[in-house]
Length: 511
Ligand code: GLU
Image (cartoon, rainbow, N blue to C red; front, side):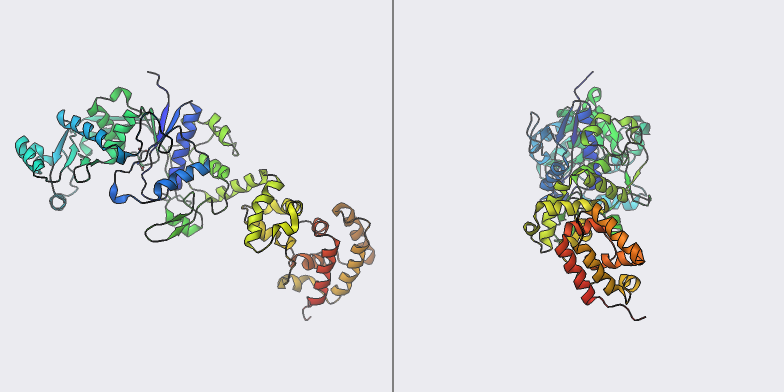
């Protein structure tokens, strides 16, 4: 059967979306777009204990910032709504009943204490064919007693009845085929009367079926859920339209050992969330890619290559290019190390693609944050300053460190540069250089340079010392772009003012 490709991103609003979840959403999106399919946003909020206010809005805002778009779902509507699972209770009730009526599931009354006792009594206890006849459930109590308990308001759960000793075949587009014996699976809980809500497993399968999902692309470990889900599709009689599973490689710690966690980010200094997150309960702040100064295009490009490649060495790809190249053929089975340095590199590359004028606009708020009024300098000046230093930045914020001297004259001078470059004779040489600069026929960088170099040569001065002392007066330290590009942009008046201040204040170290 050839069905229209339909995928879903189905996060649980239990906190901020983890960067691994963003990658899952991205692969769903790329696959849907590459195949002319639909992308659904479904919110899996059936676990009321883990619900975190604000998480759903956060997820939507994050995906929107990154340019991952949905055709259907929460915030978009569509023919299969509602798309929030907590609003679909009536639907699930019907399907739970179907499984019970067909003898594919049963009701269990075991209290948490009873389950605890069973676990304590039997090592590696599992609620399954080998143990269920010793527990308190509809199989052991009979129909009448079961009904009596339900009528009396006794809390219960519904469990899937797994037949032991059966081969369960799981085909996965990335992992290949795995055959699992059903005896290793336990009779998972599908529904809890206490919340009148299904668990993740049941809601997930029912919704994928009803929403006509063709490919389930997941970021989580595929065991033990995937074989259980296969059995659930069988139990419902939906095997023919069961979606194709795709379990993505895990994101690993940057040093490769174990799953990436928030602590790795704290330890090594990178965000693991797309946007800044303020925990509503504790007030704790977690940094985000957006607030850290990443461009969304860079984050997308970086994430796309964590577990997939286009089949060649191409690294820089726009969303459209990713879509045109994407398939699961080049998706790796093994985990992908979260090489966050590479993320910085991508950001650097994407910043270089912006025009100087665009970067200047992004720099304006940074200037303001440092107490500089951008309008005092004007767009042309800011744009030229940005153009001179942008090769050295990984983030927009780095522009301040690299270009601040274009906006504030140095008030202090780097000690180590003074020690190296400021000799007793330097003030006199700088005074001469002021004269040379003042009388240049042109302040243009390319025209100023040869004149000054010729002067240094004729005087027999040490070129490195003269130029670095000059730079020290202009920048405050011996760094920055080409010196005559600096003087051209500062203008002759400001250049001379800074030189004079250097002469007046920098003291040569005692010999
Ligand atoms: N709600 C599940 C989660 O948060 C969805 C898993 C799936 O994609 O089926 O991970």
